[in-house]
Image (cartoon, rainbow, N blue to C red; front, side, top):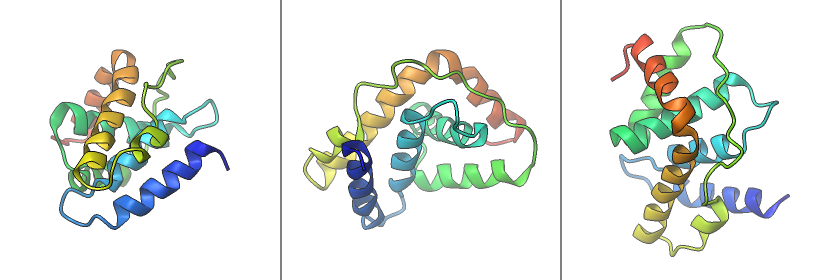
Length: 139
């Protein structure tokens, strides 16, 4: 297992014990999925990850709200559009997040990681993510 995967698993352990209405675990899942996407990634997986990052970074949604949006998206079956994969997927990784002290510092690092990944995708994916949410009446 790579250092990145180990850090992600440790981070998941941390976020799953955090509790609270924010459910920051969802943001970790979305950032990791988008950052690690490749040509074999299913379009639905990347779509959900990018919608989640868009809702967090640009709409200030909690992980619980993002989870609800994912549930609404999953209700309708249709072909999922492929999103372009940028060469650079953000300057931060799960390894960087795990260097932050548990608690508010790590939670801020999670948010910064999500911002970093979204910034890499946003120029080519913002409108597609927003359009997908409009099509499903998610706001």
